Image (cartoon, rainbow, N blue to C red):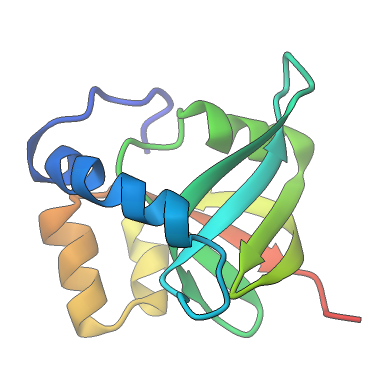
Length: 136
């Protein structure tokens, strides 16, 4: 797993440039389950921050593909804080025990088509597992 974020390049960078405006507009909305918004606090500044992410959802967790590795600032903030809040489908979910996992562990969360995209198109080598708190 990488500890620093490699420079964006290739296909994943192009996809990100095309989808970021859409992600910002639709992430976390009720009728758009592909994207969510991760709300976290800057570990140095203490500012409240938000980043749109594509994710997979299980009853117990969210899995976020990390195309630029686990060294991106938002991932480091979430790991340092021990959790964050994820807005998905219009609902805020508290998540705890964030963990960077490798391809071998992440594979179990993905279907055939989504794994092909993560592995061949995005070329991710690390993933963020966020455990969901039970809803009250």
